[in-house]
Length: 279
Image (cartoon, rainbow, N blue to C red; front, side, top):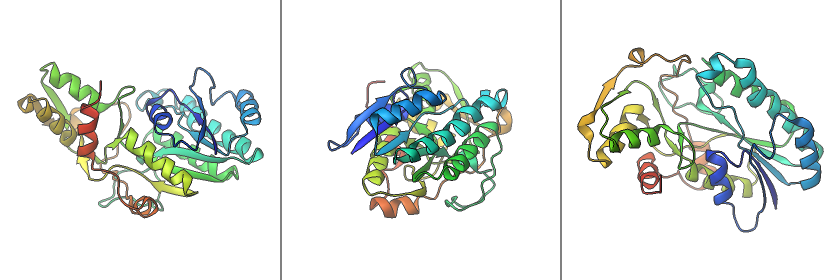
């Protein structure tokens, strides 16, 4: 199977490349080599590679900056994804694309299923919703994987920042009233390869097992560093940001668990493996 990975230099892209099954002939393209917004270059590469599957791990991920440049977020996360779908359909390739819990408004009191009403409350979420719609409208055979609170060894992430602050002995305030499912990039990547091999299409929520607040995540990390007393809680209202965040955006992963044959590891297990890696 010939698989092309866009965004191969990013956090998730690194782990998709690292965990690729041996039967896959991989064509990884970091942004510096192939920019998803350069449609002519993408079309030419698709025609040359002739992939069976295109995994799109390229994205605009600057949640707060998107508030001041929403058109750029939509250009990358929306229009470019729709164009990719149309081009992939022309060469007979399936598309796997990643979306986010931020397509939901966070007002629920139970985990969000794939069919729940999408109502983003920030520009980043709106751009990702545009990508979902444009990809589905392209007519390409596709799988949209919604995930959340992604962290990994490559690139910046909340757990990495917390580990650095804990190791440096810095007192830290963390919000206690936002809840999600922290997801370790290698676990997500491994799940995606399984879903790819099984030919799963549609929309699927994939995340590590268990709910947590940002404070829970930080507390786990500070405890591992032996510095639990350096951590204090605060409310979202005490930590204003340009982009609003969903209060409760936990994804229901039952559909993915059925397709995968079981749940992903717990988020705590993911954090522990992350901390055991070279950071």
